[in-house]
Amino acid sequence: MKWLIGLFIFLASGSSVMGQEVVSGWDDPAAGLAGWEKGSSITFTEYHDSGGNPGGHVRAYGNLTTGLLNKQPEFTGNYIEKNYNNISLDIMVNLQQLPNFKPAITLRYSPSFAGWNYELADFTINAGVWQHFEVYFDPAWSDAEAQAHGWSLSPGPTKSFQETLAHVWAVSVTSPYPQITSKNLGYDNFKLSHAAPPPAAPATESQGQEGESTEEAEQPVKTIPGVRRPMRLLKDRIK
Ligand SMILES: [Ca+2]
Image (cartoon, rainbow, N blue to C red; front, side, top):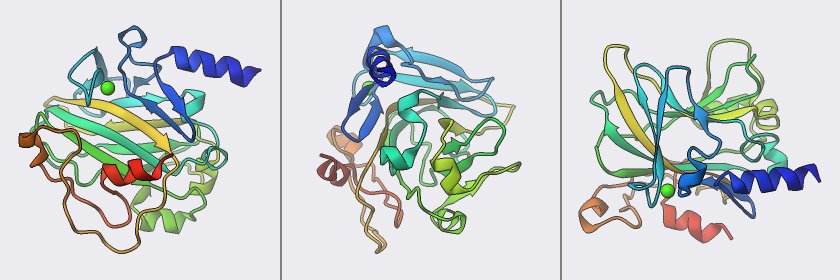
């Protein structure tokens, strides 16, 4: 019963649960941030009912580290039981001038433990274009395996990758930046799902983004070996 109540509350919040996935598309103006919080105490957030990919989206901006954080039950808890092994999202640069400050996904066991981070290494500061990112993970990975696939730990007390994935307190996407200047990133379609693992062989081809105009489709979506796949392949695999 608790689960049902939670589900209704969650659905009313503007996100949706479909099979083995949960996604925030921020398309319901009445739901606003749809339960997402500031990714840091100094983050400013704005809900926009248009300009997303498609529909509404959320912007997070400010100096230093900014972003979005989610502690809702559907986005947290035991990822092994929930069968989540893929995080995907879209990001658009509204303002960012320094290219080396890239967003990262963070999964945390609790406020008392450092998070496991995955930097979106092929993020670019190409303004006005939605960039699609996918992060594949296996909740059963050892720490060494997680690190070999690009995950890293923040300094501080830690839990293993497996312990963290079985007990996610919060998932966030945050982006560091210097104090002396500001940036503004848009976020849409944050999704947790179960997807087939990416092919082991390095993928080198570039793909245009789905649903873009001709001009925007010329922006390549790079593929990192073992991490990201073109969006249309993911859609084929999620039933
Ligand atoms: Ca949207």
